[in-house]
Image 1: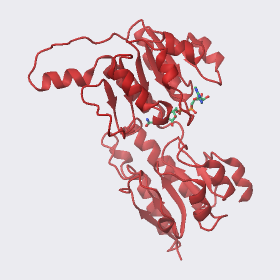
Image 2: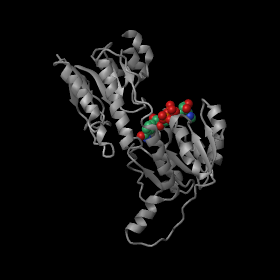
Image 3: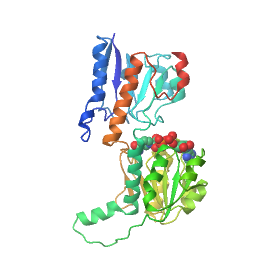
Length: 336
Ligand SMILES: NC(=O)c1ccc[n+]([C@@H]2O[C@H](COP(=O)([O-])OP(=O)(O)OC[C@H]3O[C@@H](n4cnc5c(N)ncnc54)[C@H](O)[C@@H]3O)[C@@H](O)[C@H]2O)c1
């Protein structure tokens, strides 16, 4: 029976309008792998699968490698599909950098290599954070609706960015890029990260501080932390100002949506920007300065090129007997 490579990344086959030379390159790499294998490898495209839907074991029958979107790989599922469990899966190649959708420890226990695609989506996501900051501070949706229905300005207030205080939570790749992109706004930058990069802070005039200080004093707070814990809860919101702009282009879980909704609606804080689908159906966003997007921070032309090529390369390497370049759980390699 042919070994299957499953394609679940929703935008893997998307066209790259600004880079026609790279159009279809990643798919061609996989097609060649299939062709050269003379029937031993089969590539199965299921890019239209909804990543929110829980995975079924049947979908992974005979699957050796998957190019994964944000669908969840928990311990129970990995025990059923992993090569050292009851299944055949040996590689999860993440279409992107984040691996929070995967129980990496369980993957290691069941012999599944987890590879990712670092670097390619950082700048697009930092750009999206910047755009979200401007839109929330400027109440873009409110002003758009006013003008689009033929009304003149009634409540024109919007906030400046320049010369204010920017608070960055999480100073890894994306947090640092946001600081770089925001330089032209001449802001004072304060930051919180349990693992400080003092050298970078010195070179970029960034002052590390604690979470409380950021919540209390920053005008714009932008989250770029790689944890699955909720950082902004009721206690943190209580410290903020009526002019605080809170931005989360990292992961939905970092902020308590219900608390932030109440805070924005009641005017406790100015607004919230979130790059995740809003699933709180009982908390309608109409008229509330909360701007959401469906996790598209990295879905630019450049971001997609990187994710398509890097995720496909990991599969080609693995299926050809090589170790993929970016392995998250390197300890699993001892099992190969
Ligand atoms: N919206 C999108 O499309 C998109 C795309 C790529 C990445 N992301 C998300 O953006 C975030 C940052 O990505 P990155 O590439 O910069 O990651 P990174 O690993 O380079 O940096 C993450 C930083 O967060 C810090 N951190 C961890 N726990 C923290 C905490 N409790 N408080 C403060 N800081 C903490 C880490 O020490 C690290 O410096 C991740 O959550 C990632 O999943 C979103």
